[in-house]
Structures are given as structure tokens and as C-alpha cells.
Amino acid sequence: MVQRPEIVRETSAAGAISVEQRLSFAELAYRQSWLRKALVLAVLAAAWEAYGRWLDNPLLFPTFSATVEAFAAAILSGEIPAKALVSLQTLAIGYGIGIVLAALLTTLAIGSRIGTDLLETLTAMFNPLPAIALLPLALIWFGLGQGSVVFVLVHSVLWAIALNTHAGFRSVSNTLRMVGLNYGLRNLALVRAILIPAAFPSILTGLKVGWAFAWRTLIAAELVFGVSSGSGGLGWYIFENRNALETTNVFAGLFTVIMIGLFVENVIFANIEKKTIRRWGMQH
Picture 1: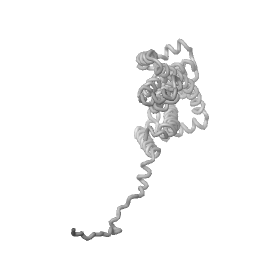
Picture 2 (picture 1 turned 135 degrees about the vertical axis):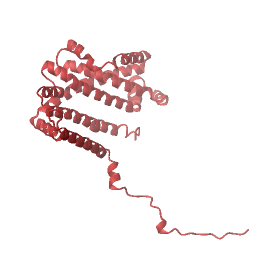
Picture 3 (picture 1 turned 180 degrees about the vertical axis):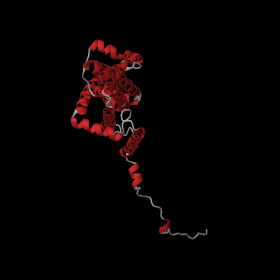
């Protein structure tokens, strides 16, 4: 047997491959979600400012800088905070009642076939019905004031949350259900310990959709009931300034609605998602 001589080739340092490489500042910045969103908002604000200056008609379309000035003045005077507090209090009542009713309907639907039929029938009947169409009935049933607004808010919240929650429960695998049953979990205990954590992405989606529906329904309802009852929140503030042709203040009210929406979506719901769904490894 002939042995072949071993050949050893030295690897030069110049040919070494770098396994770890530092990211550039631009790449690090691009990985920050808040910075990307801030850039989008800055571009939109610049476009708003440019169009307002080009149009040069404050009565029709005020600039972004004029809107911010009016917004700051209304904040300092306490007018917008007071109106926003009224709107948020009403929203909290309607949103909370809607969540409770959606939880009851969904639990009933999971527990029996009759409950499933009930939920599917009710959602098919009332979910396509716009909340604004119920305003005249709400006015007749509950009179002027907060009760009528809360009624339409419950309608706008209930079906979105119930549908998404029920869909999430139905998507839970039978394996997880059997694990819960083997541990002796039944009815509400099974829902609380197994179904809710497994279906939480769908539940959170329903909460987001319900919040968006409720927020815009509230502003629209206040435009009607605020006029009728002489009181209201941000919707009433917008309506008053529209009648007075204070277009800059109208845009300041709309700007407040947008800012509250951005805060709820990117702070409150984002933190809930971070501490639940992402922490549990259910979403990247």
C-alpha cells in the first residue's frame, strides 16, 4: 500500500471570512419600528404643509403649522382636554359593556351548539347594520345625552369582538382542548386556562377592530347628540367650530382624534401585544 503524503495548506489572514459584522447606523435606524413610523408621519405632515401653502386658503384647508398652533392654544386653554375627557369617558363605558357582552355570547357559543347558532344568527343580522343607522332609534329609546351614544357604541363594538373571539376559539387545536380536559378543566375553567391564551391573537385583533369602530362611531354620534343635547366631546367641538367657520380649530379637533388613535394603537395595544403574544412566541 502506498501512502500519499499529507498536504497542509495554511490559510492566509487576508482570506479570512468575517462571521460577525457591525450594522451601519442606517441599518440600525431602519430596524426601529417607531422611527420608521415617525418618518411616515413626518412625510405626511410635510405634504399637508406644502399643500396648505400652495392652496393658500385657510378657510378651506389650513396648513399643518397653523393646525398645530390652534391645537396648542386649545390645549393650553383647557378646551380640548375637557372635550377629550368627555369623549373618552363615554367610550370607556360603551367599550367595556361591549366587551362584557361579547365575552358572554362567545362563552355561550363555545359551550353549546344552540349558543353557536345564536351568535352566528345575531352577527349575521346586526353586524352589517351601520351603527349610525341606529341613532334615531337610540334617540327615541334613551333620549338625549350619553345613554344614546353608549347604545350605538355597544353595537359597534360587540359584533367585531364576538366574531374574532369566536373564530379564535374555533381555531384552537383539539390537542390543546384534550390536554385541558385531561387536567379536569371544564366550561369557564377551560375557556380561561386554555382557549383564551391560545386564541389571544384573534381576541386582540377583535379588540383593535372594536376600538376603531367605537372611536369613529363616537365622534359621529357626538356630532348628532351633541347638537341635540347641547353637550358633547370632540365631535361637538368639531361641529361648533364648523358652524363658526373656524376651520383651523376643526382641523385641530380632527388632529386630536388622530393623535388619540395613534396613542391607543401604538402604545396601549402595542404594549399588550408585546407582553402577551410576542412574549408567548405566538408572533414575531
